[in-house]
Length: 266
Image (cartoon, rainbow, N blue to C red; front, side, top):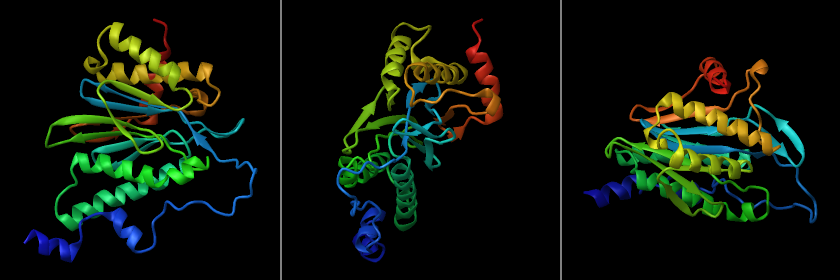
């Protein structure tokens, strides 16, 4: 019966469907003159860590191209489905396209197979997209190094993964950061986890969001590609959480209060 269902409806692999129909998005760029530098925006910096209720995912808002600041309102934390988020460091155009394909992939599988894709399947799907994007990454015009956070209702647990640009996946048990500002963030996260007031996994939501703001603000002090918060312009980091209730973003109004309390020396 299962074999007949698959013959009629397919395996539920949306990426395979795109390839077979000639619409696969990750094509190698051609016609680029040799030795010609492309001014392609790059997005940095993003971080994620386990906290008491799930996973906090955060990113600054700046996108750069070489030495130029292209814009300061880039959203680097992207919802994929109700229980998963992708945070991006690298070329936003490529990452946004990957996010759209991944979202359609999960929904296509759910509708064609009459069940949600497993966490393992979702993790591998992003890895496959990155592997198919290797040619663009090697050309320096489409490199993406994402973080993937997901809550599995069946296992009643949150999972966090880091991917390199070639598609290798790494399960993260505590914390991770990627992008140009990540070296400073990783050091502080490790210190906080080992010698802070409590391990990161035991922190409350308020403590986790406050730490995220401070981390990105610290990274911005040493890395010109990481954007600082600008309260006067209402530009704050993008912060979201993944819990048993799915994903939820911290609103701008909430961020105003959280920023003020986080930056206080008291």
